[in-house]
Image (cartoon, rainbow, N blue to C red; front, side):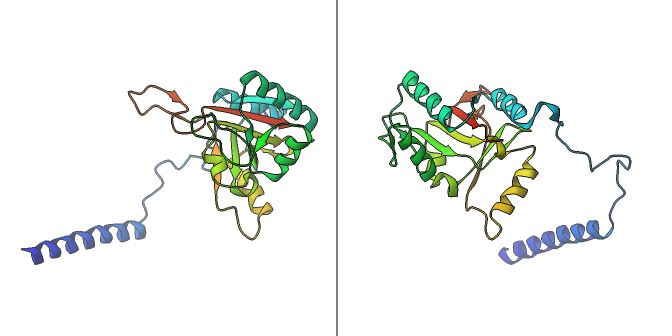
Length: 221
C-alpha cells in the first residue's frame, strides 16, 4: 500500500508540473489590454509641498511624532526638553555619531540597554525617509547593531532633510549607490509605532515593538 501511495503522489506531482509547463508555454491573452501597467500603483502626492512636508503628513497619519529642527543645536534643545517632560532614563544609543552629539550637548546616554523593568528609550540615525508612506528606513550599519532597532520601547530617530526621498524605489536606489559592494545585513522599514489588530480586530499600538515613535528631522538643505 505504501508503494501505491508513493506512486499516486508522484503521478499527482507530475500532473501539476505538466499543467504549469503548459501554462507557461501557452500564455493566455491579457484580460485587460487597455490597462496602463506603467502607471504607479500608489497615489502620487502633490510634490509642490516638498518631500519633507509630505513625509511629515504621512508619518503623523501613522501616529508617529514629527519634530522639525533647523539645525543640530536645535535638535539637542528639543531632545533635552522632551527628556525632561517625559522623565526618560538615559538615552540608549549605539551610534557613534549620535553619541558625539549627545556628549557635546551634555545629554546623558548609555551604550548598554537598561534593565527590563525600566522603559528603554533608544535613539538611532535613519538611512532614508520615504515621503510617500511616511516610512523610516533603518540599517544595522548606522544604528550600530540590530538590537538598537528591535529592543526600544520608545524609538527616537534622527534624520536629515537630504535623506527624504519620494518612494521605496528611490530609497532602494540610493542605498545601492551608498553601499555598492554590499548592502547592510539588516534593513528595517518603520511606518509608525508597532501595531496589531489580530485580537478581536481591535487596533493595539505598541503590541510587539516601540509604543511611541519620534522623528527629528534636521534641515540640512
